Length: 173
Image (cartoon, rainbow, N blue to C red; front, side, top):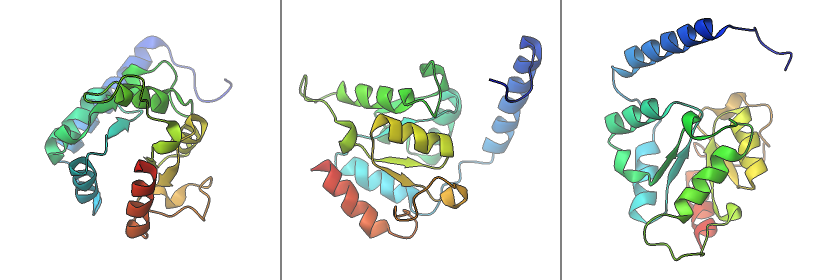
């Protein structure tokens, strides 16, 4: 692609191992969630809103953080880096998560979950592009003030929680 530094496979595997070890070291102190995240996820799950995670992180990292935070049982679907052939900004992560939610228990065959009825909370430029390409309404997350591609008219969930809940309800109906 003309970007970045070329690495041989051994160097790449070494960097990946170093990253995994550093993640485990940091995560050993426990998962720290932004204010309101646990309450939001719990409220949505208790209201019967199907929840998924679509992340560029490794599955074992996601599952470890969910277990530490006590939220592992709240998500029906986890799509991680290992589950897709093209990472964000490609829409495959969100498309796959939506398809897997469609197949979830208790949903009528063929009922489907339309992309426009999904809401994505995202904190990266690549993730915002991925959600847009997948046709999903999106909300920048708590840590997204640094994202230049975020439309300033889109409510941030830290500032507009009530509007966010209203939008979730609107998309759910």
